[in-house]
Image 1 (cartoon, rainbow, N blue to C red):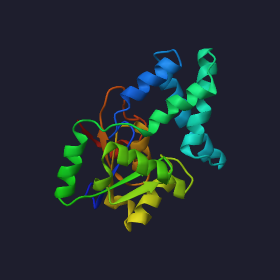
Image 2: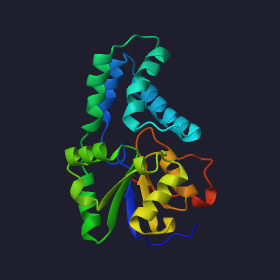
Image 3: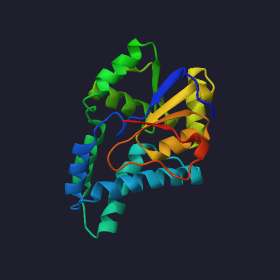
Image 4: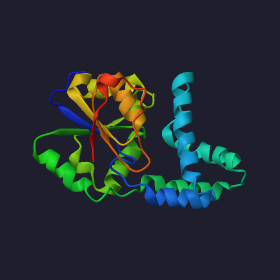
Length: 215
């Protein structure tokens, strides 16, 4: 795909802009395993894609509320509903990485349009951005709830383009997850992979579209 100057820069939120390390520690403690968060979050993403395949949509936090029980079964432990709710309440209250505010301010002042296509429902998305102090930077929060399909489905990126009055080629997606980048590649969105600990690109994505890494 030919690279061109993007009209809008799209940002993933969780683990790209927001630091989820405290939530990870809390989930690991709750599930009594150093792998607790990875198992739970992996199940959360897996079953969001099951919804894509079966065309039976549940919002992100309904799936998030269901998958801790599945993680507990995988780990051979017992959990209770009250502790589950207390733990998951923290998912909406994550702070931004230290350099995010400065970076978004720089992009905004340079005249770039910024938007956020994320998997959370609209109200939750607004709450997350407000808590992290990032609302002012984004012209239009974009929730996949509008199309009831989760990233990396093509429909999510096409929805973002339609909502912004653009072609998918006019957008650039910045994300720290290989699945976000694989999805944007397939939708002809320009890409920038933000390399972070434990995250990698999907090596089977089309080689001609492998994005530039950003550190």
